[in-house]
Image (cartoon, rainbow, N blue to C red; front, side, top):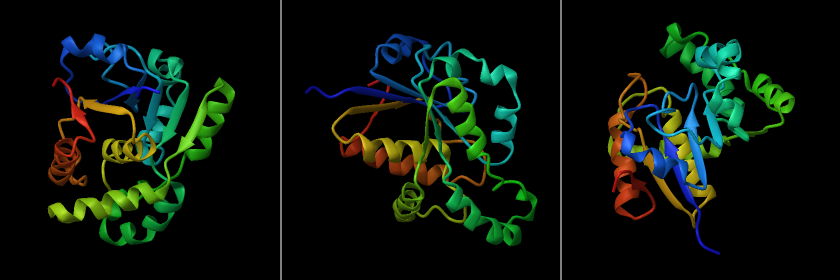
Length: 203
């Protein structure tokens, strides 16, 4: 059986010339509010969501998000943050980052209920993936950080889940919230590319 083409589309800049490449893939994964829609094509099979804290609350409370073309067309919603992992993080974060008092608030059950109501499959990415990413990032001197980005968690999960498929990414600038280890994440992704496990589009 030939391998499938999987494209993981981040919310960073996507070259418009890639739209057709993305839309003809076998599986397209986007994130949260799917800002990559448009210039980055329209096909969306999976929406990977940050299922804790303010982003989760904002999505679930938004009729616009619930009815958006990306969410409507997706057959699966992936909750990137395992509730067990974030329950364990709450106490140490209360000490180290008291300003993140709602960071670990869990909305996984609400996303599951949304999926059930809409006939979509709900997947929770296991905390072992998060732990594996932390371990892999350690080789690149990430310094102090709170958690890896959702994009890095999804990349690691897809590489593990679909080892025989052709996996490509675009829309990943590896910049954003200061408590994600973006410099180390870029190095880790580059290592996966050099090993032939992952491609960056365009290439």
